[in-house]
Amino acid sequence: MSVADTARSGPAVPRHRDDALKSVANTLDVLDCFLSDDELGVSEVARSLGVAKSSAHRMLSTLAGRGFVEQNPDTGRYRLGLHLYELGQLSVSRSRLRQAALPIMEDLRQRTGHTIHLGVADGCDVVHLERLQSREGLDIFDTLPARRFPTHCSATGKVLAAFDPAVAEARRRAAFPPITPNSVRSAEEWDATLAKIRRAGVAVNRDEVATGAMSVAAPIYDGTGRARAALSIVGRTEVMDRCEQQFTRLVIEAARRLGKIVPWGT
Image (cartoon, rainbow, N blue to C red):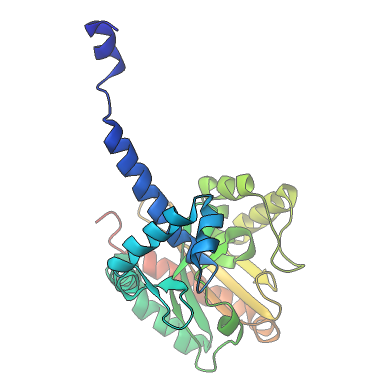
């Protein structure tokens, strides 16, 4: 290859840099294995990643040395470590959106007596940055402690998809695996659901993520009119049904208030 050809193709990336980046990616993949399991053994991690047990053990040992995972002394299996929890808590606590939302969420909880969620889209899912549980609690969250849900099974996710085409398309590409018999199951149903939400300005979820649970969500817009987050009120279906109109009005009002005070882009 001539000097000119080399210049056109750009500088060569050192092989050791490629290997280092791949190693980082593989290590992060290890952490993702714990999204669905509390504890994992070396063989399970190796099988999930498609790597040798020796490689899985080496990555787990590295993560354990930094406190990102820890080994259960009774079982020898691995679980997420306290340092990862510490970093996660710092990320959430430093969120300007969450900081601005907390007083409004608490007011909404006091006025409704129900659980309040603050959600943002992440690809084809919605992540609940904050959950203020009702005084009585909602026992589905004892069995569903996760903060990430498919957008098509969540009121916050559906309302974000309705007002952000990128979120809607991400879910469409990922398909529609149902969580309950009431979950959206097809692209046609998805499109019809989003059209209905756009007309109403809110999304309603009845028994779609858990039987007996209902929620109503409103989008939170930034200064450009883009839906950046969503607020939802969550409760038992029979109670929420009786108060749907009142709760719809309250969540829309709260979302509008929050959109005006969040320091977007700072």
